[in-house]
Image (cartoon, rainbow, N blue to C red; front, side, top):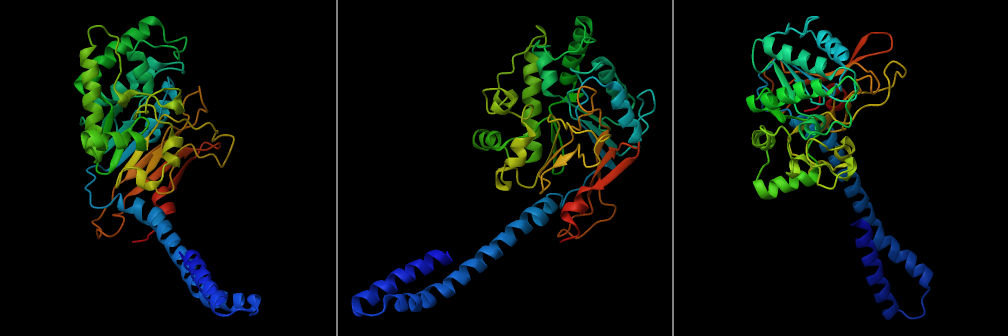
Length: 383
């Protein structure tokens, strides 16, 4: 704005000067007019730029992510989010026990208000898809409340439901696959396994909603809130499974189940297939307003045992998206990590963060569980 204003002023004044004062020292005149016409607007323009930049940074780093957790009643004492397991039942049990919600037999030991959300992809790649599935099933059935254990569907479960076993390990024999697929059909129809889950501003899906998919849902279904987004996914998943339960081989034709070009597909890319890079590269205004997306699907490849700077749980700077696929399975980095969300202990002014804490728990190379407070690191204590 300052440069354009100054340039326009320079052009007008120089034109006037040339037309009115022939034979003058043009270099001297240019310096005079430049000082008069450019100085003030350029300074004003620079100030506008600096102030707008600071306001944008404050909005993205100290506003958006803090306000996303305002004015809601969590309804839980703590929330544990666990990423993709991929057949590593040993790793799953270690994480559940470290979080204090399971004994050595996968029986629930957590408090009534605790919630465990597993992000899907229990099967494929690893050595014990059935063991991982049955451990989580036992935890869910032994829990004190249906809300204690939430099991989500991942893209690898969708592949199995389609009869696609190209990523299955040797231990995933035809008999094992049949048992797990039969069980998956029943669990989705009963609601024991879902496509999405939401509580307050927290939206859990296997891979997340990319901007283009959100635009489609906004335009054609008038879907905006976290609960509406989760409802669309769950309704469509149940519909498809109900229609193909007899044949035991499904066709997921809806764009919600499509893979985008980032994952080798030709569709838009739904919340089962979105690569986390899509969410990190999206501008803040293209993502759901007032929603924190917590996803899996995009595995960490660094090892916490080998690198002290390895961050297996990653997040956007504004906390609009957090990926908890820590590379847990032996097929990846064998990391041990999970996300823990703690609600406020006391009511807080609605203009503040409400005291909600988002923590990462990571097992380091020395066998010590390290904690990092993302809300303190990013939001600090700003109002």
